[in-house]
Amino acid sequence: MSELRYEDIKENSKIYCQLVDYYNSDQKKYVREMLDGNYCGGEGARSAWKERGIVPRARNITKSIVDKSGQLYNVPPALELWRNNKVFQDKQYNLLMESVDWVAFNQSVDSLVRLLKTVVIYYQRYIPEDTLTTDGQYVFDSARGDRLLPTLLHKGNCAIETDVSNETITELAYLTDRDDCDEEGAQIMYRVINADVIEDWMYDSKKGDILLSSQINPFGIVTAYARHDTAKPLYDEWNKAPLDILDLQNMYNLHLTDLEFAVAHNKQQSLFTNAAIIDNGDKDNGYIPFAKTGHTDPGEGTAFITGNEASLGHVGKLGAVVLLGATSDGTAATVSYEGPNADLASLSNVMRDLVNDVALDWDVNLDLDGTANATSGFQLVVREINNLNLRDRRAQYAVRAHRKEYDILKVMYPSLPDATLQVKFAPPSLPVDAKVEEEVWDMKIMAGRASIVDYFMEKENLTEEEAIIKATKIQAQNATFSRVQAPTISPVNTLSDGIKSV
Image 1 (tube, rainbow, N blue to C red):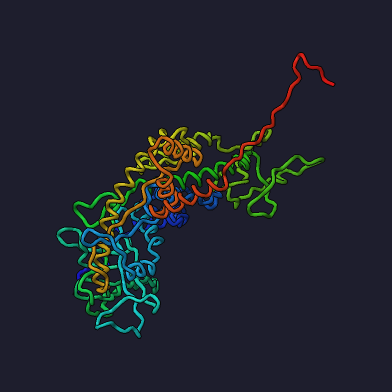
Image 2 (cartoon, rainbow, N blue to C red):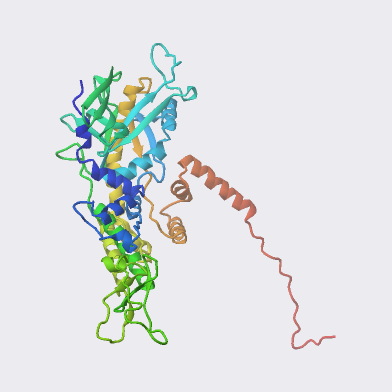
C-alpha cells in the first residue's frame, strides 16, 4: 500500500497555486482578499473599500517577466536518438511525440518550471479497448487512437517521494478532482502511484482518507520525472518557489487599484461644507440650504440627514457631500471641494523602478519606457548577457530531464529502441533590429568569416544540405536573371575650331 496521503499534497500548496493563478491572469480574487483584509494577516487592507468606490485592478507582470526569462522552446529543439555514437530516427518515437503535441506542451512546462523552479511531468498511456499485441508485445499506433497523455503537476497539486539520489520518483500523489460537498466538509479525489500499485483515494473532512480502488502497477515504476529550473534541490525534492515576484505582483496590483482611486478623486473631489444638509427624501443625497426671500419661520429648513453614509464615517466616497458641522454663531457657511494631491507620476515611476529591479533579478530587461533599446550590437549583447547565460543553464537541466523522460517511455513502450535521447536546443538569438542583424551578416560574409550557407542554416533553420541547395539555386538565378547589360554608347563628333558647320 502507498504512503502518501492528502495531507502531504495540501502541505504548503497555497503559495504554488497562487503563483500559477498569477501567471494565468487569475488575480483579481486575491486583490479583493487584500482589500478585505483576509490576505496574510491583513496585508493591503482598505477600510470600507467598496463603499468608498475603490475598484480592484490587476496587470499581469508575472507572465511578462517569466516569458522573457530564458525561454527554451520558442524555436523547436531537435530530438536525436543516439546509439553506438550514431544518430538515427525512429518512426514510432516521432509519432509518440506528435501525439503529445510535444513542442506546445513543453512551452507550457518551460514557463511553469521557470516560475516555480520545480515541476513534475506524469505520463499515462491511453489504449483503445480493441488493441491487439504484436508477438505478445504492445506497439503504439496513433492511427488506431493510441495516445500518450502527459499531466503537468507542481507542489500545489501533488506530492512526491524520491530515492536516495533524489533523481527517481518512487511515489507520486496528485489531485484528480475537487468536489465541494456541503458547508460541513469537502470530498477531494486524489491518486497515489508507486512501483507496486495505483490507488484512487478520497479525502473526506470528517472521515479522513478513504481507499476507493487499487490495482497493480503494470510498469513497475512511477512514470513521472521532475524538471528543475537552474539548480537541483539539495535537501528536498522541490526547489522553493520565489516569493519576490509574488510580493511584487501584489504590490503592483494594489498600486494600480489605489492609482485609479486617486485619479478618480482628482476628477470628482468630495464636497466639504460646514452648513447643515437638508433631507430631500434621498437617503444618499441632500442639499445645502439657502436664504429664502421674505419671512422664514424659526427652524425651517434645518433638518439633518442622519442616515447619509457620508456623515457616518465613509468620508471620501466619490461625489459625496461631507458634513463638517453646522454654524451656530451666524457666520457664513463655507463650501469647498477637497481631494488627494499626490504626485501620481512620481509614484508610478517608483513602482516602475521596483518592477524593473525584480525583473533584473530574473535576468530580464523590461522595456518599460523605451530604456531597454540598444544602439549597437555590442551594447545589446552587454544588456542581454545575463539572459543568454540563464538560457544555457536552463538548457543543461532540460536536457537531463528529457533523457529521464525517454528512459520512462522505454518502459511504457517496450518497442521503442534502446537508445539515449539527446535534445539540442537552437542557439540563442538576440532581439536585435532586423536591419542591423542583416548588416552584421553581410559583413561576416564579405570578410570570409561566414557563408551564405551559414546564414540559411541559422536564420531559416535549414539543414546544411538544404542550405547548400538553396544557396546554389539563388546563385544560378542571379547569374541568369540579374546580369546587367552595359548600354551601347555611339561616338559623337564635335565641331573643331577649324571646321565650320554648314
